[in-house]
Length: 342
Image (cartoon, rainbow, N blue to C red):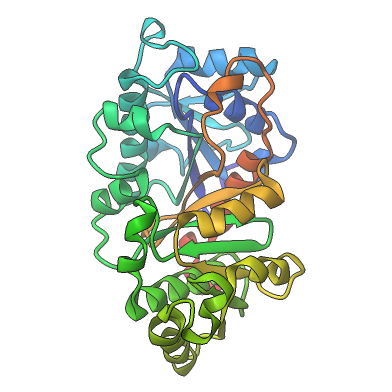
């Protein structure tokens, strides 16, 4: 039956040489998946069939000619399938980063974003991509998030969130050399990162998020003897956030705050640079983590692991992170579709 109150969630197959196609096949073969969203899969038919073969499943879909047809489908019990023509089998060498795969990934993602701008798609969940292949295939930015932001006309603060179950992290800086991380620390950027993850958790169904801010230096700077960023930059940001009504605490030494978060004391941590949060999250649950593209006008999620070229085509890929990414896209897509219910 048609249900216009259900969010339209677009799925893509990711890098054709990686584990993405088999992950999406496994995802869509899970019981109850189609009750969570009005799903549309965008991909090349041969690649979709290849993913099902590797996963050892067969997934029935309903063909559509455009994203515009998805929301009004009379029967949403099957995923819609929008066939693309972005890459040929002979262009793909499994388990290698290639320009053709990057260009194919980019084309599918752009079509999804076009759909969000026309009001045809409420959220996007993409299977793993490879940044090097994407850059070979035409990506002009440091990562996909910056491409999304420019494509969607974002002018405000944006950053990646990494999530594991009920724990989310945001970053003040991301895909840059570590030597440049200190120069990007500012009170304004920390305030923006904390506000963004706070509001995103609310969009994910948490009314009053508990957010902590990590320190930058070892031992939280040891009172200024091991760096003054905590005193001069981070603490003023927390004061400003509290004054604006955001219940944010810190700064806490980065080597202990994740223990508190793991035990449920906090639901989100604002980290100062990429690996400060990523190492902890991946140690706690590499096969479960999700990356959420924060600060965009549409929810975009993906499993936090990569294309896993080393096991691509072997039918061994773990679907759990992809399932988690899909479920977050469904929840946030519902909030976007029905903002008055948030």
